[in-house]
Length: 261
Image (cartoon, rainbow, N blue to C red; front, side, top):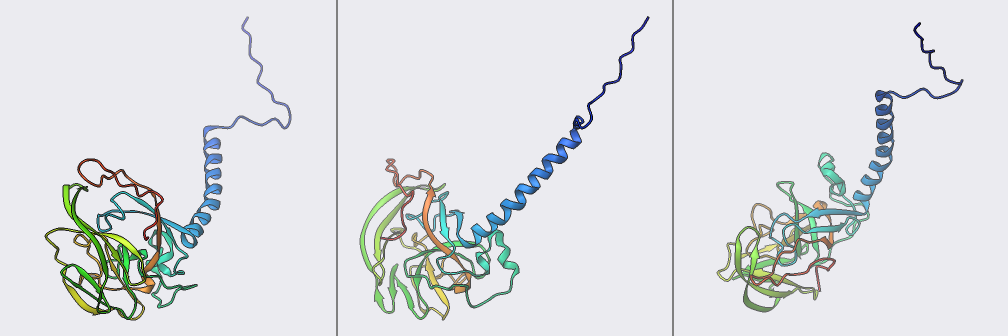
């Protein structure tokens, strides 16, 4: 005589076992709720407070190396459409003014939007509105006066993807007293002679610290940068690849250092 199994019964109010689709749906709802909270926080933080950027080229050597990750303060100069993250500001109309506007200082290392290509750039601010900028034989002149320059011994370093590179390292002193290092190739470069050129109103003149390896405001394809295009002031390196200063392995430490003396 065969036995039959009685159907399973559950007490009133006892939860039914959830199927795979039930669990998947609950998981998706949980993620959606988390993103609904986190995305606005991320958007506000990266617009109003800090941004982070990765250095893609050697135009700011020795201050910054390829692969360095930097913190940028968005509030330093106030806010424009380019303060928005993810390139969203490019969809908004242009404006000549910034919210809570403050002008940058000579010697600041600045992240900005290229005025012609729209690419994100980082250079050092050399010229303010109304300044006359000139370069002769690689020597920078601001308003007719040559900037202070110390050092100049020939050294060598491990360049990104190019092996050992010979260079001269100087310490440049800008008119407001800001001192910073620059690199120049011993045989000079294409932009060693420039100007004189007056910086237009509401524009700024930028140069890379690696003077012979930087397409900056000296280059006709970029020129002076409008105030609106400034994204923020670079504050420090929070992550640095171990790039070596010269062939014998003396590595430069850039982590958590400022960009001006």
